[in-house]
Length: 259
Ligand SMILES: O=C(O)CCC(=O)C(=O)O
Ligand SMILES: [Fe+2]
Image (cartoon, rainbow, N blue to C red; front, side, top):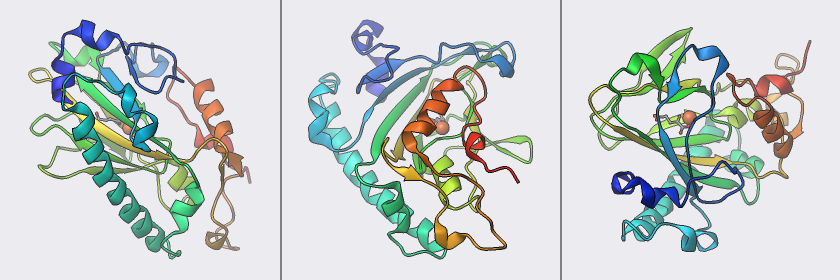
């Protein structure tokens, strides 16, 4: 991935688009975000599916020449890791080990996003990626070693998550919060820019498909834990996501039940 972002910009420009529906795409967080102050986005993102390989691998770059092969191997290994993580999280909720995977459903939306943040002479004026929550189930994030940038918010404070060699960061995302009826929290996070070094991160996402209905798992609901979210189709969730474009999104909040 590092080599992909070292290619001349003209080479990557063939993938540049603002069309969300493209499978393989390069884009920038070019939008002005209203509520994070006077900062400019400072990143370039390359995104495409990671499974099932045969559906999209012919669209992936042929430069760097080893890209398709190396990516396919990585995706296979991360697929195994996702299965393990989803079953551990299910068991952590006191559920059957297949429960979360089953609820996220058939034909999940499996996408990857590589984020490249060039070194920035004045990091105060820029943001790599604005404050957000991932919207799927969980995210497996790999950070380039030796360059900090990722921060998570806890009790209103930003905490830096330094890269640990040979380790992934696992983000709990919105659908896990809803399915767990709020027992597990989706993490708010952002990426800041670095004055001296370019940074790269690679996220692998595991989302429901548009037809899947999501809502708190019935076994987690009782008198003491009344249902916190209404049921929705994931398509509706994504429509709400796009509706909130350009500001700090609060997507799952739109599906909270008032009491
Ligand atoms: O660059 C990072 O560490 C954050 C990336 C991220 O949050 C994302 O791709 O959703
Ligand atoms: Fe994220």
